[in-house]
Length: 400
Length: 94
Image (cartoon, rainbow over all chains, first blue to last red; front, side, top):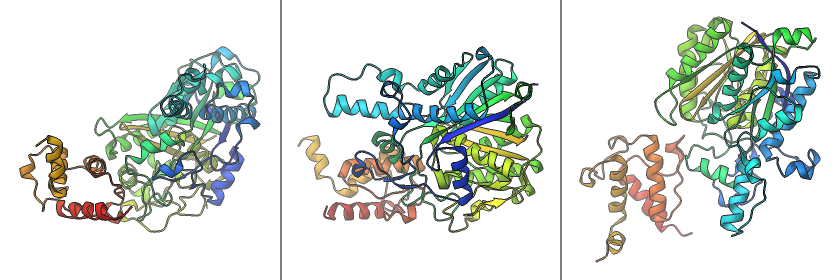
């Protein structure tokens, strides 16, 4: 079977506008959650979030481009350009290269702005490019167009597991020989009035900040941004002298086939077991898990129970953290940005912490790397994503 | 008397019991003030929908967080406590 490696990475997210800046913030345990600065925030009950700040779209794109680029597409293109540059992806067969990107909301800002225009302001005309701007595959298509990638290009939308499912599909595409190079990851920009108002209804949003695994947590906090990776056939990467950051060793997806929102221990456990089996890993080899770790009581307890079930005695030895405590929940881009913490663990031996942790929860009795980053020598990691709809997706990476 | 007038004349308790009965798929006669959300068989989603129905019915904002129901400042431990909390919110100025 063809082996798949990561040869490039890029990101823009609340912690930073590059991989280096993001990992520096993760090492320092920075929390990017703060007061939301969006239109009509006074009509929201949820007024905190992790926004990409100090960002002016006009610094990155022309007016003509912005007519077509929703905020989530902008994030994807910024992250994608960094990844392609790092991979030095110049000499490749464009027909053997593609994109599979995760997003949950797609062009939600565009939808929100234009619903306002027609419903609230009573306007009878919208810009001609609203459809291509808001469609969920806009970011994947613009990555394809920008970098001339002419092979398989698709978008995956599975709520909070979107980018893990996307990366799993990229892995499968290369393994199956349908492409040699795939840009993959996720992009999300849901921090607009309608995007937050919908989440408010579920009553699972935190009042103060995101405190995964802490007994005094009050829920999740939304974030935004993108991370894009270059996944590549290992032989292809070696032949062109690319630097390999890590191996994408395995992936598994499962469905709870149970409740539309409540998580399932069994579904999560089966996904973790499946990813290890696909990667040829034993539980004892896994040194770090980047948790789904949303900071809701239901997720955190279920996830910890699943880890206990799968890893047994080793559950106490491995490290697990939720970086959502720092960058918020990026929904369809969550797994992608969280893979940066996994890469940091493998390449630098630094485990990103779970910040904002104040009180041990007996139902989350694992080493969750509270508040301060830690040095650890790990050679295999898992990244968990458990989505509404009961869809679970786990990625396994190993040291190159 | 119109149906609207009849609804208006119902007490807060009557209307909350009706909301809970609708959510729990029970006859309203089977819901008592001593019932709890558990005894009515309401799961977490049912509770969130119940809170929403209460807010819409009484035009109030209920401070309820599904992660920490006990810390929400809105006592959902029984039908009686919910009625008391709603009456309190209705009477609160602003």
